[in-house]
Amino acid sequence: MTTICGLLQESLCNVLKHAKAKHVAVTLGETEQGEVELVVTDDGIGFDPTLAWDGQRGMGIVGMRERARVLGGTLKIAGEPGQGTTVTFSIP
Image 1 (cartoon, rainbow, N blue to C red):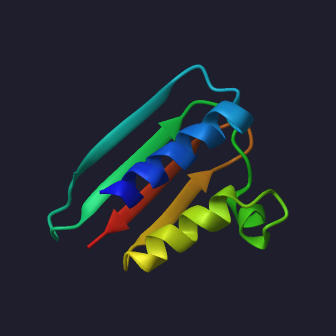
Image 2 (image 1 turned 90 degrees about the vertical axis):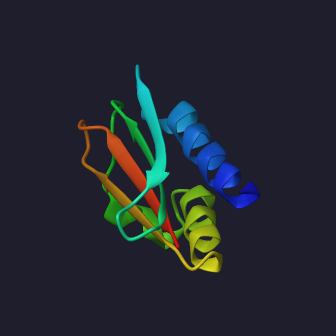
């Protein structure tokens, strides 16, 4: 559970530091496949997620991806400039 808290904390820090969001929604639940799913969605400025994987935008997303991987899970980021961002962690 501590690692899930770390994933949530890093996601919320990214919203505060970068998104300029007015709203953020956090959901935690279980999928039909029995995975724990954490979803963080904001209405901020968004960004191109394909640029986030090179480590040049900071280590936050790289660290989140590594934490999810260590747990056997996945990290998905959906967003576009001007459209907000959704970060989804799925952990078995």
